[in-house]
Image (cartoon, rainbow, N blue to C red; front, side, top):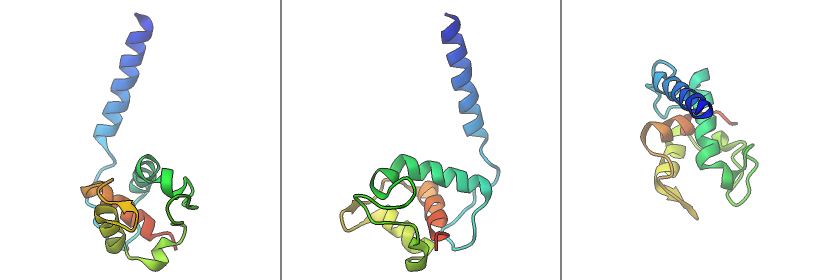
Length: 110
């Protein structure tokens, strides 16, 4: 019972931290640098949805390398690829603000 209570409190704490967020969430797919909190969120989203194909360090694998993707595509172009897919990549793995956050973060990799 004690372990269950501790697990519930820990889960609730994580949920509250996630709900509180990092302040302003008004990132759009621009080439402007993203804030520290958004960078951490983008890395987390990338690892959850993209790293299995593009590698944990953007080194590529099943999908292409993304280490310098910002040299080839703008944030808006990257967001379009995330939303609609390209080549063998299916679209829609990330949507809305999540796609914008990851696109802005990837566009910084030059």
